[in-house]
Image 1 (cartoon, rainbow, N blue to C red):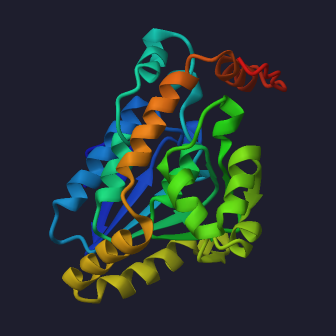
Image 2: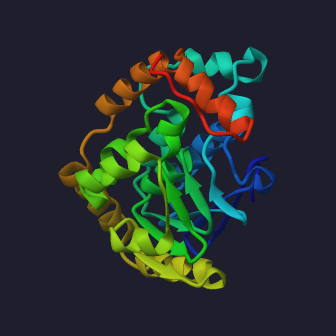
Length: 264
């Protein structure tokens, strides 16, 4: 039933499965993918038949973050200027996911790095395959993370471990992610979707209105309001996109070399 170019959407027995479908780019998000990710979650939010959502990526990755060549380069024709003219508020795709009152299970099948890690953090559960990897790589590009890394990560792993992941940009494997409380469970790669589906079926069998209010209650009591932080992120990114260190972070990635940061 998918009408999207970058996302494959299916619905069965009250469960929606959203698969990022840009495997040639390791499911990195370009402008269209961000737009479609927002649209699909808005669509699911309006569908009374949906009781649970599984979010994953087409192998070999979950989501490798921003499509650097399109979104973060300096060529205005490929989106660089759009990224510099950051709009106030939380990323629209993040807002759509965080506003969604259906439980979301991230089935992390491979790399979840940069905004891909934040994307997994927007979910209520993270189930990882043995091939999963997680990394808040924003600092490597001279940037700050979205609200996933700044609000949700510290609640899951504690402020000290969150600071380590955010400040170093280190990538951790599934086992480490389980040890620090980032993921609910680790399963063999070929069993990942089966495990996610089993949890989704269990949730979907309960009274849907009660589940939705429980999710809202947890959001109010634990996660808080993300909009203030989202506004700060947008304002900060507008500054950081102009820095030499950001340009060096992107150039070194594209040129496959070690970066040389100057603090400017």
